[in-house]
Image 1 (cartoon, protein in one colour):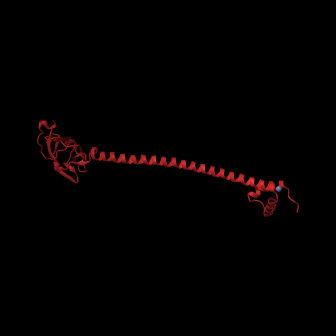
Image 2 (image 1 turned 180 degrees about the vertical axis):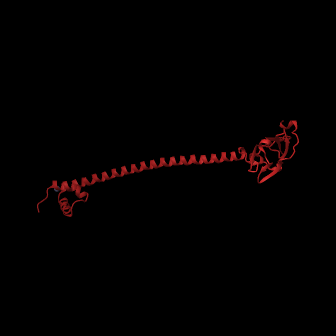
Image 3 (image 1 turned 45 degrees about the horizontal axis):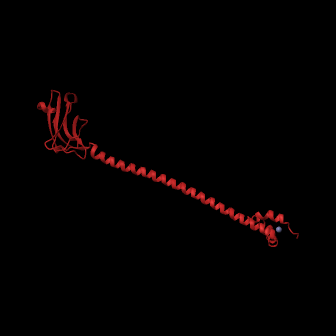
Length: 214
Ligand SMILES: [Zn+2]
Protein backbone atom coordinates (compact mmCIF):
# COMPACT_ATOMS: atom_id res chain seq x y z
CA UNK A 1 0.00 0.00 0.00
CA UNK A 2 1.50 3.22 -1.15
CA UNK A 3 1.91 5.92 1.38
CA UNK A 4 -0.77 8.59 0.99
CA UNK A 5 0.52 12.12 0.67
CA UNK A 6 0.15 14.58 3.54
CA UNK A 7 -1.70 16.98 1.17
CA UNK A 8 -4.49 14.48 0.59
CA UNK A 9 -4.79 13.75 4.30
CA UNK A 10 -4.85 17.48 5.15
CA UNK A 11 -7.58 18.03 2.51
CA UNK A 12 -9.65 15.33 4.16
CA UNK A 13 -9.09 16.39 7.78
CA UNK A 14 -12.18 18.68 7.97
CA UNK A 15 -14.38 15.85 6.65
CA UNK A 16 -12.81 13.50 9.17
CA UNK A 17 -13.40 15.99 11.98
CA UNK A 18 -17.04 16.39 10.96
CA UNK A 19 -17.32 12.58 10.79
CA UNK A 20 -18.67 12.61 7.28
CA UNK A 21 -16.04 10.48 5.53
CA UNK A 22 -16.31 6.76 4.80
CA UNK A 23 -15.06 4.12 7.22
CA UNK A 24 -12.14 3.29 4.90
CA UNK A 25 -11.04 6.94 4.63
CA UNK A 26 -11.40 7.21 8.38
CA UNK A 27 -9.16 4.23 9.02
CA UNK A 28 -6.63 5.55 6.51
CA UNK A 29 -6.56 9.02 8.13
CA UNK A 30 -6.21 7.59 11.64
CA UNK A 31 -3.27 5.39 10.57
CA UNK A 32 -1.63 8.40 8.92
CA UNK A 33 -2.14 10.64 11.95
CA UNK A 34 -0.46 8.07 14.20
CA UNK A 35 2.65 8.09 12.06
CA UNK A 36 2.80 11.70 10.82
CA UNK A 37 3.48 14.36 13.38
CA UNK A 38 2.94 17.24 10.94
CA UNK A 39 -0.59 16.14 9.97
CA UNK A 40 -1.38 15.27 13.58
CA UNK A 41 -0.45 18.84 14.62
CA UNK A 42 -2.61 20.28 11.87
CA UNK A 43 -5.51 18.12 13.08
CA UNK A 44 -5.00 19.32 16.70
CA UNK A 45 -5.05 22.92 15.47
CA UNK A 46 -8.24 22.26 13.49
CA UNK A 47 -9.93 20.78 16.60
CA UNK A 48 -8.97 23.83 18.74
CA UNK A 49 -10.32 26.26 16.14
CA UNK A 50 -13.57 24.38 15.94
CA UNK A 51 -13.98 24.44 19.72
CA UNK A 52 -13.44 28.25 19.69
CA UNK A 53 -15.98 28.51 16.90
CA UNK A 54 -18.49 26.51 18.94
CA UNK A 55 -17.85 28.78 21.94
CA UNK A 56 -18.58 31.85 19.82
CA UNK A 57 -21.75 30.18 18.68
CA UNK A 58 -22.75 29.60 22.26
CA UNK A 59 -22.11 33.26 23.08
CA UNK A 60 -24.20 34.39 20.18
CA UNK A 61 -27.02 32.05 21.28
CA UNK A 62 -26.73 33.46 24.79
CA UNK A 63 -26.96 37.04 23.54
CA UNK A 64 -29.98 36.12 21.46
CA UNK A 65 -31.55 34.58 24.58
CA UNK A 66 -30.79 37.85 26.43
CA UNK A 67 -32.45 39.73 23.60
CA UNK A 68 -35.51 37.56 23.86
CA UNK A 69 -35.56 38.05 27.61
CA UNK A 70 -35.38 41.83 27.17
CA UNK A 71 -38.17 41.58 24.64
CA UNK A 72 -40.33 39.50 26.95
CA UNK A 73 -39.56 41.89 29.82
CA UNK A 74 -40.75 44.79 27.69
CA UNK A 75 -43.83 42.80 26.81
CA UNK A 76 -44.58 42.05 30.45
CA UNK A 77 -44.06 45.73 31.31
CA UNK A 78 -46.57 46.66 28.61
CA UNK A 79 -48.94 44.01 29.95
CA UNK A 80 -48.62 45.36 33.51
CA UNK A 81 -49.27 48.86 32.16
CA UNK A 82 -52.43 47.73 30.34
CA UNK A 83 -53.64 45.75 33.39
CA UNK A 84 -52.97 48.88 35.50
CA UNK A 85 -55.09 51.02 33.17
CA UNK A 86 -57.89 48.44 33.13
CA UNK A 87 -57.91 48.17 36.95
CA UNK A 88 -57.81 51.97 37.33
CA UNK A 89 -60.72 52.30 34.90
CA UNK A 90 -62.74 49.67 36.77
CA UNK A 91 -62.05 51.30 40.14
CA UNK A 92 -62.88 54.82 38.88
CA UNK A 93 -66.04 53.55 37.17
CA UNK A 94 -67.09 51.84 40.40
CA UNK A 95 -66.41 55.01 42.45
CA UNK A 96 -68.20 57.35 40.05
CA UNK A 97 -70.95 54.77 39.45
CA UNK A 98 -71.58 54.53 43.20
CA UNK A 99 -71.41 58.32 43.55
CA UNK A 100 -73.83 58.72 40.64
CA UNK A 101 -76.21 56.07 42.02
CA UNK A 102 -76.23 57.57 45.53
CA UNK A 103 -75.92 61.32 45.00
CA UNK A 104 -76.98 62.22 41.44
CA UNK A 105 -79.45 59.73 40.04
CA UNK A 106 -82.98 60.59 41.14
CA UNK A 107 -84.43 57.13 41.34
CA UNK A 108 -85.77 56.84 44.87
CA UNK A 109 -89.48 57.56 45.09
CA UNK A 110 -90.86 59.58 48.00
CA UNK A 111 -93.51 57.15 49.34
CA UNK A 112 -97.18 58.21 49.53
CA UNK A 113 -96.93 58.26 53.36
CA UNK A 114 -94.13 60.85 53.25
CA UNK A 115 -96.06 63.34 51.18
CA UNK A 116 -99.16 65.50 51.71
CA UNK A 117 -101.03 66.35 48.52
CA UNK A 118 -103.69 69.00 47.96
CA UNK A 119 -105.51 69.43 44.66
CA UNK A 120 -106.88 72.76 43.49
CA UNK A 121 -108.50 74.20 40.45
CA UNK A 122 -106.76 77.22 39.04
CA UNK A 123 -109.20 77.97 36.23
CA UNK A 124 -112.07 76.00 34.69
CA UNK A 125 -109.58 73.80 32.81
CA UNK A 126 -106.48 73.98 34.94
CA UNK A 127 -105.84 71.68 37.90
CA UNK A 128 -102.81 71.91 40.12
CA UNK A 129 -101.40 69.65 42.82
CA UNK A 130 -99.45 70.93 45.77
CA UNK A 131 -97.03 68.27 46.99
CA UNK A 132 -95.56 68.84 50.43
CA UNK A 133 -92.78 66.53 51.58
CA UNK A 134 -93.20 65.58 55.22
CA UNK A 135 -89.95 63.75 56.02
CA UNK A 136 -87.65 66.75 56.34
CA UNK A 137 -85.60 66.12 53.21
CA UNK A 138 -85.30 68.05 49.94
CA UNK A 139 -87.37 66.95 47.00
CA UNK A 140 -86.15 66.00 43.56
CA UNK A 141 -87.97 65.85 40.29
CA UNK A 142 -91.57 65.05 39.47
CA UNK A 143 -92.03 62.06 37.22
CA UNK A 144 -95.32 61.24 35.51
CA UNK A 145 -96.65 58.15 33.83
CA UNK A 146 -99.97 57.76 31.97
CA UNK A 147 -101.47 54.31 31.43
CA UNK A 148 -103.66 53.21 28.50
CA UNK A 149 -106.85 54.09 30.45
CA UNK A 150 -105.82 57.75 30.90
CA UNK A 151 -104.83 57.32 34.54
CA UNK A 152 -102.03 59.67 35.50
CA UNK A 153 -99.41 58.68 38.06
CA UNK A 154 -97.33 61.42 39.63
CA UNK A 155 -94.29 60.68 41.79
CA UNK A 156 -91.46 62.65 43.33
CA UNK A 157 -88.05 61.07 42.77
CA UNK A 158 -84.90 61.96 44.61
CA UNK A 159 -81.41 60.70 45.20
CA UNK A 160 -80.71 57.76 47.54
CA UNK A 161 -78.59 59.99 49.80
CA UNK A 162 -81.03 62.78 50.57
CA UNK A 163 -80.27 66.32 51.53
CA UNK A 164 -81.76 67.29 54.88
CA UNK A 165 -83.82 70.48 55.14
CA UNK A 166 -83.01 73.10 57.74
CA UNK A 167 -85.33 73.36 60.74
CA UNK A 168 -88.66 74.95 59.84
CA UNK A 169 -88.11 74.51 56.10
CA UNK A 170 -90.57 72.53 54.04
CA UNK A 171 -90.22 71.29 50.50
CA UNK A 172 -93.26 72.03 48.36
CA UNK A 173 -93.58 71.12 44.70
CA UNK A 174 -96.41 71.97 42.32
CA UNK A 175 -97.63 70.02 39.36
CA UNK A 176 -100.47 71.18 37.13
CA UNK A 177 -102.12 70.36 33.83
CA UNK A 178 -105.05 71.34 31.60
CA UNK A 179 -107.57 68.65 32.33
CA UNK A 180 -109.87 69.55 29.41
CA UNK A 181 -107.02 68.78 27.07
CA UNK A 182 -105.49 65.85 28.96
CA UNK A 183 -108.82 64.23 29.84
CA UNK A 184 -107.45 62.09 32.67
CA UNK A 185 -109.83 59.63 34.37
CA UNK A 186 -107.93 59.79 37.64
CA UNK A 187 -104.70 61.03 39.13
CA UNK A 188 -102.65 58.97 41.55
CA UNK A 189 -99.56 59.67 43.56
CA UNK A 190 -97.01 56.86 43.20
CA UNK A 191 -96.59 54.05 40.72
CA UNK A 192 -99.34 51.66 39.50
CA UNK A 193 -98.10 49.12 42.11
CA UNK A 194 -97.87 51.55 45.02
CA UNK A 195 -100.15 54.55 44.80
CA UNK A 196 -102.91 56.61 46.33
CA UNK A 197 -105.77 58.27 44.48
CA UNK A 198 -105.52 62.05 44.68
CA UNK A 199 -108.16 63.14 42.19
CA UNK A 200 -110.71 61.54 39.87
CA UNK A 201 -112.81 62.96 37.07
CA UNK A 202 -115.83 64.83 38.41
CA UNK A 203 -114.26 65.67 41.79
CA UNK A 204 -114.87 69.29 42.57
CA UNK A 205 -111.78 71.11 43.68
CA UNK A 206 -111.36 74.18 45.83
CA UNK A 207 -109.95 77.26 44.16
CA UNK A 208 -106.21 77.51 44.60
CA UNK A 209 -105.08 79.95 47.29
CA UNK A 210 -103.32 83.00 45.89
CA UNK A 211 -99.97 82.11 47.42
CA UNK A 212 -99.81 78.56 46.03
CA UNK A 213 -96.83 79.30 43.77
CA UNK A 214 -94.93 81.41 46.26
ZN1 LIG B 1 1.25 13.68 6.96
